[in-house]
Image 1 (cartoon, rainbow, N blue to C red):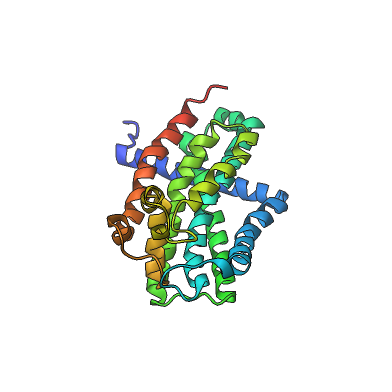
Image 2 (tube, one colour):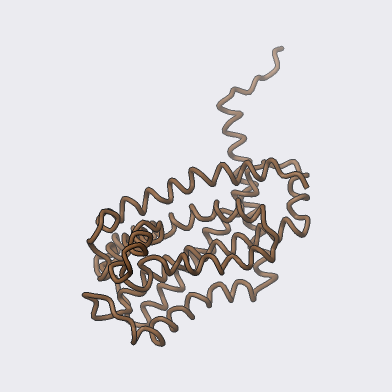
Length: 274
């Protein structure tokens, strides 16, 4: 009697199924760690709300954007994008902490798919970002912000924001595997200027020429501009090729970032030697 031979497609399907299963196990493990440290979760959800209050009510009265009567209508898409950018800090610290505490070594010694751990971090980051975005949208609605182009456009805007966050997760995983927890925690010092050098709080047209060019081609500006257009919020139109094609860049930039950093993150994980 001939032994049963497993065909290549069946073998591939089984491998993918186990990889996804193990990835969801890693995701569940990360969620449990959040439950055990609730202050970290509470802080990450409170920070976007704090930014709404700070820039919507404290600084908002002094902000002026050409063609914008209600600054909070301009502000909210910028805060949505900034929150997706700052999500890198959470990913960096999670990955760096696992490495420093020996969790990474333990996982690498187990008979699991090598890509399941990084995929688990990806699922965790997306879930966390979705919660942040929901809390920020609810806060925006509470202060009078609205979307004006219907539910379909609003959903597309949210998907563009999450697409940016998805691409940045791979940046966070790759860099987090190279940094100590202390260095990962200080990454905010770099990210905050990046979030300001965009159309987050003011129009790039109000900046000096050299800053305006950098701001207009910032991937964050593309996502913010495209989501603002889909939401129907004012103030981010025209003036340059990048501004006129914000939706194209809002899709293109994350795809490029993912194409570069996803393989780097997986390769870095596979080649770790600690």
